[in-house]
Every structure is written in C-alpha cells, then in structure tokens.
Length: 173
Image 1 (cartoon, rainbow, N blue to C red):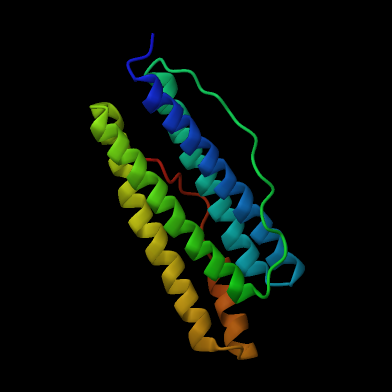
Image 2 (cartoon, helix red, strand yellow):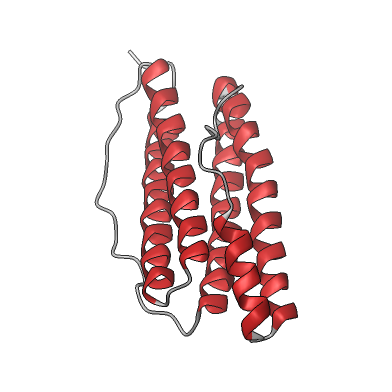
C-alpha cells in the first residue's frame, strides 16, 4: 500500500513523463546539432538528455520506495527542425523554464497533500532547476555575444563539447 495519496502519485507519474519528454526533446536537439556539424553542441544536448532521464528515474525510484505504482504514459514526438543551433539553445532554455514551473506546481501540490517525503524529494529538483536555468541562460547569452562569428561559434561548440557526462546528477543525495 502506498504512503502517497492517489493525487500525489498521479502527479509524480505525470512528472516522470515530463522528464522523459524533456530527455527525448534534448535527444532531438542533439540530432539536429549533429546534422548541422556542431558536434560539441550535440554532445552537450546528449548529456542533457541523459541528465533528464536520470531525473525521471529519480522520481520513478521515489514512487517505488513509497510503495506507489509507476504508470508510464506515451511520450509526444519532440520538435526536430530548428531555425539554427543558437535557436536550439533558446528553446532548451524555454523548456527548462517550463520544467521549473512543473516542479513548482508539483511542490505546491505536495504541500497541500501534506506529502512531506515528496516535499523533501522535490526540494532537490527545485535546486536543480535553478542550476539548469542558469546554465541554459548563460549558453544563450554566449551565443548572442558571438552573433554568428564563425571562429567564435567554433570555440563555443568546442567549449560545449567538453561537458563531462561521467557524473551522476543524482549522486550524493
């Protein structure tokens, strides 16, 4: 028997789906960047996809630990064509802002439902979203600074390609 209400369980299941969609969306962005031969940007997006998948699994594991049922829903097809590589990062930033709103609504629901264990778990996600938004905003800003300069774009692509994927984003929690 679950220690979470059905309303809370359903909402966390929905967020699992949201995180999986975000992962899928970043994978589509990675494929676009790869096609445009921005392999560093593609690598960054692939690492971001893996991080979003890890977020979904963190919520999945939380439901399991609370004795709740996990129900996986269909994942919508993500956007696959973009105006440009800088536009991809603008969309990624907007996506992170959307996820922040989802997490905040989930936190509010957990508070209303007095789901204290969920509140503690979701605090990690709130902190994570501050970092996610800042990172995406900073990259969008860097693209605006280089403003199409080929040498600067190559440098930025190289910088984004240096992102390490070896760290487990949920480690240490």
